[in-house]
Picture 1 (cartoon, rainbow, N blue to C red):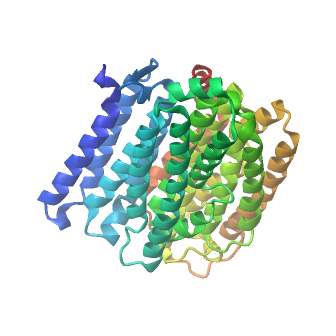
Picture 2 (cartoon, rainbow, N blue to C red):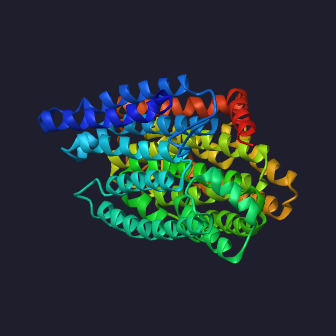
Picture 3 (cartoon, one colour):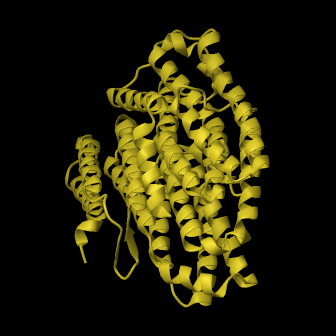
Length: 473
């Protein structure tokens, strides 16, 4: 057993306890450097993850899988955590004296996501899921003096616990049918016994639980309220990293674990994908709060991503992997711009973005590039990602879903451009300049650069995603 294969997880665990110990030993008013310690540690974890990116191995009796698929998602989780921690440094200093707890919880949530990506056993999968979600519950309610933050934390806890119970019930049915919790053995057993009504019920329960994690209709109701109330860096973390973790599990579970019985769930997943795209985009139109608009936009993007899963092919998986990578940068850029704006003005209302291009040209261009990428406008990365997703579903002759996706994407351009119109074509009520901290400037610069670069030259990431998809199948 090569324990070096789980070195990234061990490093994140050690880093979390080191940050916690430092936070307990030094006075609260001297904890401002904890964010930078966390950043350095995460960069070390990222480098280590690349070192062990080759091979396809299992540890602990197939309970833990280390393959290129798991490594790809771990890299995304770590990059998301680095960007969120960097952007949150000044924010955490401002709203709380308990800075250490924030970074520790982000690290434990990241650890849970990494375990999810490598889970080869139902128990490992559930432990990783709960480690991630419990940390996210607390982070959502982190701003203790804010009623909306507390309300969002309670809503997320109640609905999240319900979805976890549904998911766990589905997993228990599979264990009862197969007599094992190891995914490789379950796959062999399922292929032998085929589909039966009880197994179909288990599929539905598991799909419902995972649909909640990716905020797909009709399990999306938590996202707008939670994103609006949560601290903005955490809203970005949930919108990107948590959703990515959900898709990592969804793809491995349904495409790897049960490929021979896909016909039983693929119709249901297609209905969910269509409803998610339609509801997410149409309900986003009347939104007046930027975080709620981004929440419904995120719901719609979950529908787009489900198209790649429905394609049930190498190209479909490649499209999902690439889109998750570029979605990370565009969404974090949009949320961090919104966070910087609300910190300076105290408002999340879209109408207050009037004249932002004159109050802060940097923030305006960051939001512009992020929204246009999310809308799939060339030459930004979002266009390439949606092209791959839509072509993968067309190749499987799901023309109705492809038609819905194209129409709904056109609708999304409307509400994204409404924000752009406010920023560039409306007069500002105040000419007060918006102050941007250096860490946030760095995050926005990185997200804008990645969004432009991956739109003009997507080759490096597409080749990696393609190789991962080939190995996965």
